[in-house]
Amino acid sequence: MAEKKVVVSINHAPYGTIFYTEGLRAAVGITAGIDEHSVNTLFLGDGVYYTLKDVNRDDAAGYLNTLNDLGARLYAEEESLGERNISPQQLADDVEVIPRSKVLEFFQEADCNVDF
Image (cartoon, rainbow, N blue to C red; front, top):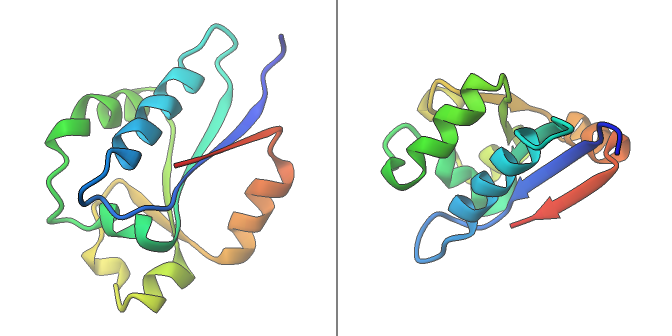
């Protein structure tokens, strides 16, 4: 199988669910697989709450470290942040803010999308 472009989108707030942890675990698995697929991990909608500096990330630290080691990036959608009155200065250092147009581009170029 050849390398695929995959989008992992995390759309749920990090409270009371395991969606964000499972999404990050899936991103690691896809990135670290035998074909080393290209993965963009996007935080959209209420998922952007996970990108805040003060969110406890202990339960997903291993996944985040592995993604970082593999050179994978984490992205938060600018419009989702604005709709929730979250400024880029409030985000963790490992998160890049991108506009909705770039999010759309990621989805259009992807061979596969996995939503959490």
